[in-house]
Amino acid sequence: MCRHWYFGVALVLRPLQFRRRNPDRSPGGLLLWFTLVPWSVGFVFWLLWRFRVRGRKHIPRTGPAIVISNHQSHLDPMMLGIAIMDRAPRAMARRSLQTDAPWPIPWILRVGIQVIFLERGAADPAAMRAALNELKNGRVTTLFPEGTRSEDGAMRPFERGVWLLIKRGKAPVLPVAVEGTFDAWPRQSRPRLRGRVLVKIGEPIPCEQLLEMGVDGAIQFLHATVDTLRAEARAEIRRRSRGRWPLPGPADEVAS
Image 1 (spheres, rainbow, N blue to C red):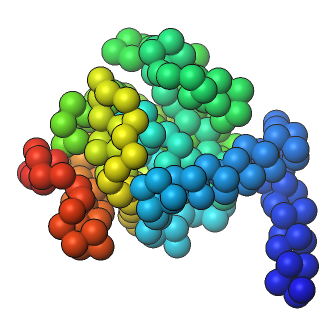
Image 2 (cartoon, rainbow, N blue to C red; image 1 turned 90 degrees about the horizontal axis):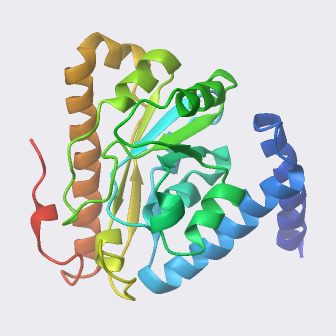
């Protein structure tokens, strides 16, 4: 009984907690999209792929943050959003997702999560202003610096747009790795009810540390950091599944 009472109070207070961080959104919308939906979808993901998150203790409780992650599958935005749902993040994603991602992903991104859509491979001042405004107001922005999904599960090079956001946003960077979604939903394929998925969150990296490295050094460092987290997550999945998952392939190699 006491446990049920505590859960009920926490559920009521949760929108108020989010409301302080995201005053532009209604309490009902925050409760739905950053509590009820993530809990429900996360449970389904656990049933299908034994979805787990490691390192939530590294998520800053307050203040701005730029969350970066590798990109293996259409599942990644949802997995990443569930992993850091306590900060009610606003994601950046390529505009073409509105047409080439299967339903209901475009609707969820546009209406529920209110994604900042941007033009890939071109300057997009409006998207940059929207992301910088989130950081200015102490909120969290997420993006996939590879720009598109991996062809084989291994990480692609990071695009340089992430550097501009770091330089102008002056916010710490939270590195995250999503591993296993390539087996669950490969590119140019339908979802598969197989595999295991793990999200691993690393320690925040101070903006000042990255700025001292310069654009090339910072991008290389961030890529290596995320790829190391990905390799650690991959090793844990393989250990827990007794070698069954993930399937052997190029993703077994860590980029130098």
